[in-house]
Image 1 (cartoon, chains in turn purple, orange, red, blue):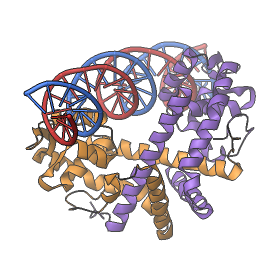
Image 2 (cartoon, rainbow over the protein chains, first blue to last red):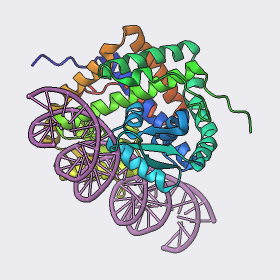
Image 3 (cartoon, helix red, strand yellow):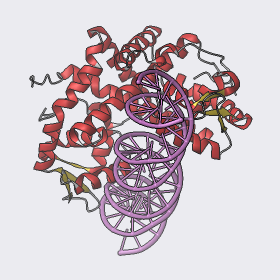
Length: 170
Length: 170
DNA sequence: GTGACGTTGTTGAAAGCTCAACAAACGGCT
DNA sequence: AGCCGTTTGTTGAGCTTTCAACAACGTCAC
């Protein structure tokens, strides 16, 4: 086994700052969303992705993949969201294994109500704290990490274009 | 209520890349740590902080603060870690409310065993994917976000210096 | 068609986190 | 001393995530 290359003082500081920043940021975002809209960020993302897709419906597996979620997690989440009436499940036409998750009108309303506060949080706690150059660099950094951690041929990479913009923004 | 400033296409792309990167990265780190050392990253951090402190012991409240954790979360975590024999709780000398969390030898051994694999993960999945300039920028970005989200007078900001380096590295 | 293998989605249990409520102890004030 | 507000740490319930197991279906070779 090769010798361990420990983090030097600078790297250590970067690493801890990164840990603190992401933790503080995502916790804050989650708290705000929970308080304002009664849902965790993970659920919000489900609604967003559905709202951007034709018919506001998507196959479970496709949805899981573009969210970077496990099938199990999505299954549980969709069950909860269905209880609240924010989406419903339907069978797929061609594949009898498949399930479609479809956003309901009620779910769309909940999304539209939640979106402004959420976008405001993202701006206030992230973008507004950075210079334009830092935003650009953050994107390159993020894309490098995603590229590294994404298995080849993963469709997630080409799913990043904005689709319809209906009631989302984040 | 002021008009919502939605994310434009560029911001949207940055935001989604950032989401994907942090999710992929932290999930991977957690999986590796769970597989190699049988603990989630949150627990690993507890052991690290204790190992860096004099006597390998810290007050619960201080520990919670420097970890950016709620007292409740820490309490549950410490209970679990105590069950495994990786730390123990002791009363504090001067304050009868206080509890000290103290790393055991067994806990130290577990930490030393886990550290190399963890540091390797941090390098492989983060630092090695970035140029030196990007690492520096990531630090500035992170520190800006931390500064923004940290209540004034929060001691966390001055807790970032490397203490002893004993068996940690991350 | 049959069989082997991969895919899809769900389920239940265990683990971790959040939140609100709480008891115990501290500190300052009168 | 007594009182009041604050701090400390814990607890239990509820919720989300993980993990392994599973049933149902599709696909491909034969």
